[in-house]
Length: 79
Image 1 (cartoon, rainbow, N blue to C red):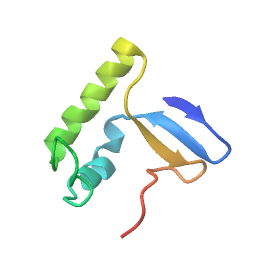
Image 2 (image 1 turned 90 degrees about the vertical axis):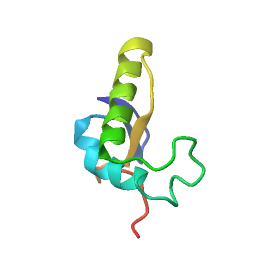
Image 3 (image 1 turned 90 degrees about the horizontal axis):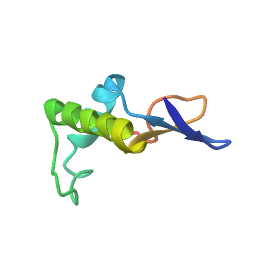
């Protein structure tokens, strides 16, 4: 579900279709260097998304996926 958009960007709720891309990001030690939770595997990523979805349902907000309009996916630099 889309949360918000600007002329260039879109913010969406996470869903299970985001697991492969998000798992790759959260498994990167450099990305997670300052994270209190540390590196995540796929199961931890699925639990993270489930927690985000529960927060959407309970509080109406939670972490989301940022993407460039018309491009899909995440805003993340390519290696």
